[in-house]
Image 1: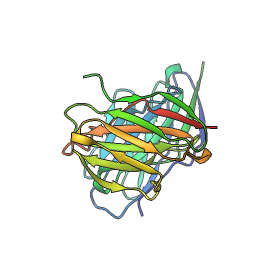
Image 2: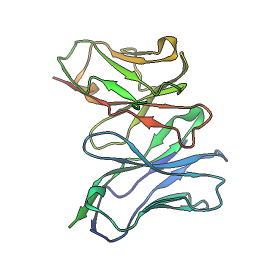
Image 3: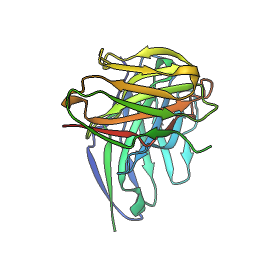
Image 4: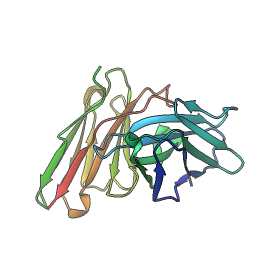
Length: 113
Length: 115
């Protein structure tokens, strides 16, 4: 079965510091995609970063980078130089057969001034 | 292109009533997905369409739920005889079939409260 696990219900980080949000996945498919989304209190899901299973390099998008360790089946999100506006729920997701996304339980990130 | 639109944003209904939500995807996207998100949880897949064809339905989609996408454009999700357990955020997303690596765009959701 395909599954995403996020073990950190909540995280705190000081403004301007870096933070790592954990994500592990389980799949038997050789080809898959991993995503991170941000969900502010307003509810919309905002795409942050994508990593394909065959990508050799870790994905980066501005202050976001994905630490992809295929053998460990982990895809952790690293946010550098945290900002107050980064406070939100963060979801890790995997593209499953048919294109649907399977989401983890989420991590609530709080950035302290 | 204004993104994925969902209507209404909020809906309060009495138990036993029927409700219908609408999703307008990005016009050139041929895939449309519905998800349900309960408080404190990640979104769960309900169903998806490619053009007007409904290709997959989750076991979460009981007989009281029905979704349509006539003419492959907008989609509706109807819940009949609502129950308190149906209270959730209902999210719609659209994508290109051939661009599943980046192309998922989500709407802002419809928050349903069943009282």
